Length: 234
Image (cartoon, rainbow, N blue to C red; front, side, top):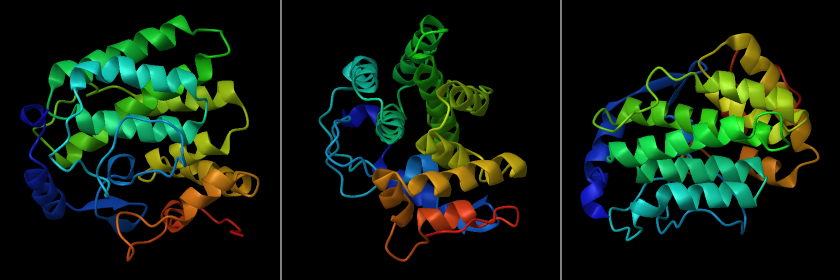
């Protein structure tokens, strides 16, 4: 496993040397990668780290990544579980182009196969979200494989939201993806996220989490810190 991973020390240095601006606020890294989501006791890919990043001591065999990831996605319809599982998958595959591409292609085939079925929304979401996670990973790890280069993941997430209907966890994902715009889309998704969190305890917990460390802003602060987003947080 270690030989297939970008050095976690090198990764940390790259992260410290790079500043990313989201929604007028400087963040220490892209949120789809650098923020672990709270999924309670739900099953996801194995994770031994106590932070958002891999430790460098993982023993997980990434040859199983595509099969394991899709099995988890198929077994749980909770969007936050999908977000965290795909975040972990992107990190595991960060220095193995074939593995990263294989999962992307599997998700693409899964999305195509789910066309017009009840699974279509989540299949489209997973493909789009993973593509956006790979793109964000590439911002801080230029040596990382990015088979999603030029892939419009956000368009697929928007399609998923239209198919899914009312799902504030998907709105949360879209609000994170659009921190740099489009501003109108971000405003809409942020407002729906806060409204939906009133009846979604898991989403509410995630909004209260701080980004990367205890001194950082909460996720609620981050998605609401744009001039175009005015929400009543309760």
